[in-house]
Every structure is written in C-alpha cells, then in structure tokens.
Length: 367
Image (spheres, rainbow, N blue to C red):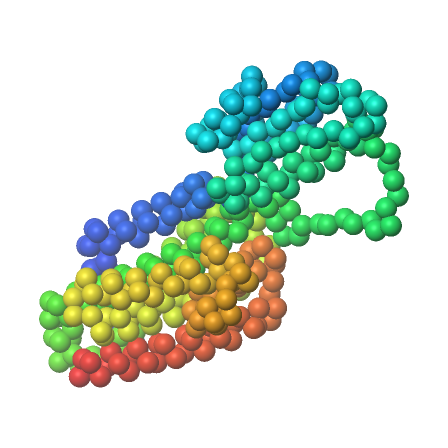
C-alpha cells in the first residue's frame, strides 16, 4: 500500500506540473458544457415567417396573432406579393410563409371552406416538422376560439402527456449524456498519453527495477486519474444542475458509484491504448478511434431506435451506451440501482474484463 501511495503521489505531482493537461481538464469540460447547453439546442422556436395577408380584416389579423403568440413563428415581414414570399424562401430569409386569401373572412362567415396556405422550407427536416405540426394545432385552436366550428363530443378523449421532460428541453437530454461523453474522451486520453510519456522518458523502466511490483505501479498510476474523472463528472453535474436547472431526481450516491464503474472502463481503455502506442500521438489516435463510434452509436445524439439492427448491435459493445441510460435514468427519471440492473451488469462486466486485460497486457509489455 505504501508503494501505491508513493506512485500515486508522484503521478499527482506530474499532473500539477503539466500545464497543458491541467488546461485541457479545466477548459474542455466547461467549453463542452457551454456548447451543448447553449449552442446545441433542438427546441425549435421563433421560425422567421413572412405573411401575405390579402384579406386584411380583423379575422385575418387575429389568425396572424395566433401564429405569433405561439412562439413557434416570428413574423418578419408583411409581404406585398407572392413574388416577395417566394424570393424570401429561396434566399433563406424565411423558413415559412403564411398566405391568407382575399375572401378569408367572407367565406368563414358564410360557413364556406377557406384555403389558408403555409409554405414551409423543408431543407432542414427538424424545423420543418415543428412548423408543420404546430401550425395545424394553431389552426385548430383558432377555429375553436373564434367559434367557427361547434364543440363536439368525440368518441375517444385522447390526452397525451409528457413525463420526465414535459417542456421537451433539449438540455435535459444532452447535458446528462455529456458526463459520459467527456469521461469517454478525456480520461482515456490523459491516461494513455501520460503513461506513454513515461515510457518515452524511460521512467517506467527505472521504476520496474525498484522493489515496486508491476500491479502496484499500475494501480498507483491510475488512482490520480480516477480522482480527476470524479472531479470532471462532479463539476459537470453541479454546473448542469445550478446553471441549466436540470433537476436530479435520483440518488446522488448511486450515480456516483456507477460513474466510478464507468470510469474504470474508461481507464482500462486508456491503459490498453498505452500498451499499443509507441508515442503520445499514436495514443491519442487510438483513443479517438474508440471515441467516435461511442458518440455516434451510443444514443448520445442520434436515437438508437432509428438505426439498422446490425448497427444497433454494435452499440451493445460500447460502454457509453449503457452509461447514458444509467445517467439519464437516475437524473431525469429518479431510477434506482436495481431499476437499472439491465444496464449495470454489462457495464460491470466490461469494467472487470477491460481492466484485467489491460493490466495483464501492460505487465507483459513492461516485463
């Protein structure tokens, strides 16, 4: 135990003296948190909209107000012609255009059908779907409010409800996943490059000729990075909760324990990469080779349900796939340890396998 403490203390000193590593550990989580919290936002609102009102009556104005008050549409210009509308859509000045015919009010008062057109720029499917769905809801609400259609008793009273994230805030989904992303990227990177740097300088070979056993050397090397990983995860969760107001419904202790398990997997990947790489650049490339599939196939950004079966099966071999469900389940749903057992046991198995394999390979490589 004394030897492990000595190696760990030595590693802490090296980390504190390495300004580049310290800068990476401090700046990277904060920068990613700001980008994903503020910059990457799938809550589409305030779509720039042109309006061509050919009726210009009180009822057409109330329809326009119904669109603007919904927060999904922002009227930029009252167009004077269809040509102006088409030009705005072509040039990207508007993402939608509301066209009200000249006989809008007259036909409504006569209980005749009226064709109101909403032209939507479909080049980006996300805002296009938002405009399509929200505009239909706005029209239905407008007709009910203006008593243009009778209130009917429908045979099915359909009342959908949203749980866990009723306002559909993208930060609630993205920021908990950011914990897994940064640990998957930073911890293996700094572990692998630090060990490879020691190999390049010949320090590890000098330590191996001392009475320190190889497993004591490895444990002492990875302990500081476990502490750094815990610090990174704690800082992200704290900022996420107090700055972005993401509620934490589950047990913090359960989250802490399962984050430690995920950290062991990440450390094992970094340790394994250090046994393959001959220099720090190669170590970084190996870690990035594993990081990119984790981002794309784990469900961090793209839903796994929309992937082909064979691609989804690849995701089962990625530890971040399980950790994302764990961290989102605890933070957003308040799930407990046994509620997440289907995600916990594969992660525990990965932690045991990767750390045992990495330590054995590291010991064999060094002896």
